[in-house]
Structures are given as C-alpha cells and as structure tokens.
Length: 305
Picture (cartoon, helix red, strand yellow):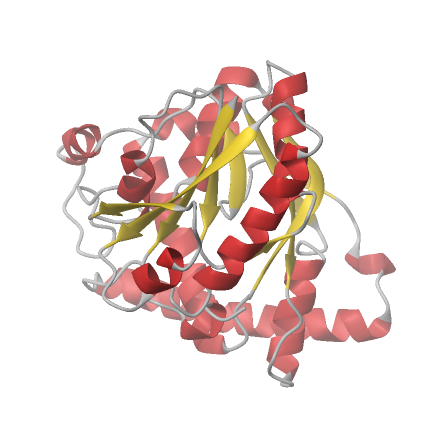
C-alpha cells in the first residue's frame, strides 16, 4: 500500500532539507512495522530560490511544479490512488513516530477522516520576553482552549477535498467587493475549511490527534505574531463569508489551565495578551481602511529549523 506524503513548498531552501530528512526517517520507521510504503512528493509552488536544488539532494523524493499558492500545490499531487494522503508543510520537523502513528490510526479506523500529531514549537532563538511568551502560549495551546480542528502542519486526510477556484469565484460574485478580504482569490489556508468539512461529514470522532510530534519555528517578534494573527482572522472571515454553511462546525472546549499555571507562566501570558491587543488594533485599522494586502507574507523568522 503506497501512501503519498505531499509537501507544498514556496521558497523554503532554509528549512526543507531538515524537513525532508525528518520525514524520510519517520517514513522508514513506519515502514518497518506497518504494511505501507510512503512516497514523498515535493510540489514547488513558484519557487525562486534554491528549494529545488535542496530537494534534488534527497534521492527518492519526487518533484512536481505548481503555481497559484499552497492549496493549488497540494491539489497538484492528488492523482495517485491511495486510501488516504498525508500533507506536510516544508518547515517542520517530524519525529520518528509521526508518520507511523498517522498511518496506523487511519488504517485501524476506516471511519476516521483526519489524523494529526501533536504540535510543539521549537525553543525560541530570541531571549526577549515576547519571544518567551509566544513560545509558552504555543506550547500550552493557549492555556484556555483546544480547537476542534486540526493544524495544517502535518495531517492525514481521507476523502475530503477543497473546493476548486471556480467554485470559490462563483460564491465570491455574490459577496461585496473587498480589497482586504479579496473573496474571489483562491483558497490559501487548508486546515480551517478542511476541518469544518470533516466535522460536518463525520462529527468530532472523525478527527484524532495521534502519537508522535511535529516541531516548528513559531513567531518570536510582534511583526511575526501580527502576520500570523492576520492570516488566521482573515481566512476565518473569508471562510465564513464564502462557506457560511460550515460556520457551526467548530466548537471550543474550554479548560481553566491558566489558573493552575505557575506565576512565571501567568506573567508571560500577560505579555502575550498585551501583544495580542496590539495585533487586534492593527487588524481593525487594516480592515477599516480596506487595504489591498499580501495575504500570506513571508515570515523569515519562522523559516529556519
């Protein structure tokens, strides 16, 4: 049984080598104990740097070319027939058990539509209070909530697909024009709408967090934090407007974890909340001014592993 692992990459020369090495090692570990073989496919999305040269140094990794963003890159590699597919970002480190745990969960439970490993930020490189606060926030999953949707870093998916550009544009024609939200633009983020479709089709039991872990470089500056915040808020707003039938899918399970945290962690969380207030204010200004924005600007600090 061949399981494709699709890695969408746009100018990832500083991270993709380490990412592929970790995925190759994880695939080999999984193949030793499961009746599967992983086929790694890197889809180069309008790369203008040395990403291709780095990938070519990893024998056995197929290279495809694409244009039009991450979702279109992922769509480019879906022709291979398989019971499910694994999708990966190009700036992550998968541990030895990550792919095996995903495959085992999907093979054992045919009703499972999506599986994803635990996500942890790498230790921050900067020593600033904000860098420490952002690291802690991501490490503790926000202290107070767990989302009922999977992260888009590494996940296995069965049957569910994203709408085509044509469907997005047909829905966008019914919405008011906006330079900021740019409704007729193709989909950029995959995890929000995919998660909603999984939940609507199979319910909360259709997705599962598995064993194994994926590590990534989280933002460490106010600029990087704002770009991440803006991406999330913008894509949620676009998804709600374009696919209003999916809005009821997401739920939040609240847990009072911050109250039990040590004083140091509470202080760092207060720093995070102050920075978040600044991000919200900037976002409201951008929306009010209806700026024509780059919806997915590169965040250099997150592209080194």
